[in-house]
Every structure is written in structure tokens, then in C-alpha cells.
Amino acid sequence: MRIAMIGLGRMGANMTRRLLRGGHEIVAYDPSKEAVSAVVSGIASVEDVDMAITAGPGLRWAVMGPHMTFHLGGGEGGMTHLLELLRPSFAAWWATMTTPELTDAVCQQIIDGVAAEAHGRSIAELARERDAILLPLLELVAERDR
Image 1 (cartoon, helix red, strand yellow):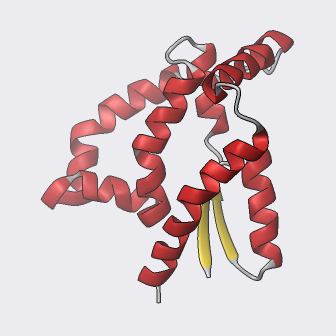
Image 2 (cartoon, rainbow, N blue to C red; image 1 turned 90 degrees about the vertical axis):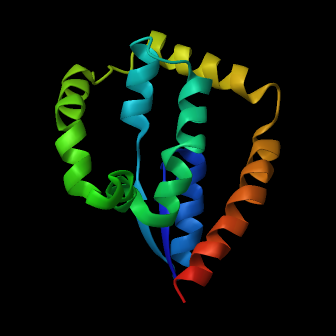
Image 3 (cartoon, rainbow, N blue to C red; image 1 turned 90 degrees about the horizontal axis):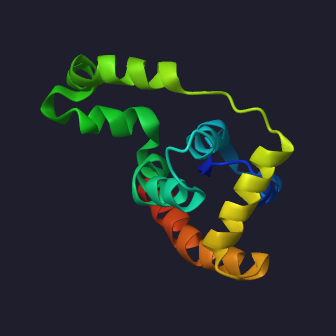
């Protein structure tokens, strides 16, 4: 089975290793740089970035990938129409993105933001919550690909 993984942090990397050992093909994307940049630049909080990905492209990318999702976003004109409309905006946005240096202060900002978002839940609790949602989604994607 071919499985898409978005994020290769501690949890994503562990899941990816297990899936590879199980004989699955993995296609991975790690948006961590963009996520950290948004927090460090003051654009959004850690929780806001996570919510934006999980409520927006995260699920869509898991089902169809980023390019096909953008293609659908262009309506009947597809990717051609989307790029005609948004190319200048994308270019301007990408030009402002920073590559944050992972200083002690930046690391602490991310650590504190994740702790606030976790609301006291343990790693095991968070993993159970994630898996309760993710595993049925992966099964649906696998069913579609059969």
C-alpha cells in the first residue's frame, strides 16, 4: 500500500519506520520549516498553525496530494486557473518566508506553544487521539486505491 505522510517529526518518523517495515511505500512531506517560520515570525501561534493544517490542507493532501488539491482549488479551470489568479500572491508570500535559525529561544517558543496546545495530555494520550483519527482515514484511502 502507498501511504502519504505529512510531517516527519518524532511521531511521523516513528510511524513511517513502522509502515516501511510492514512493506508499505511511503511518500513523505515535512512542512516543519514553514510551520516554525510562521510561529517565529509572529504570523500565528503553534496551535493556530496546527489547526490551519489539520482543518485545511492536511486532510486534503492525505487524500489527493498538494498538487491535485491545488488543481481542484482552481475550479473548472484547474491548476491553470489557480496559478493565473494566485501566482503573484504565492510569489509574494514565498519571498517573505524566513528560514528560522533554531536558536535556544526559538526552540523554547515552539516547546512552550506545543505544551499549551497539548493542554496537559501525555504523549501516549496524544498518540491515541491521532491514531483514532488517522488509522480509519488511511483505511479509506487504501480502499479507494484498490
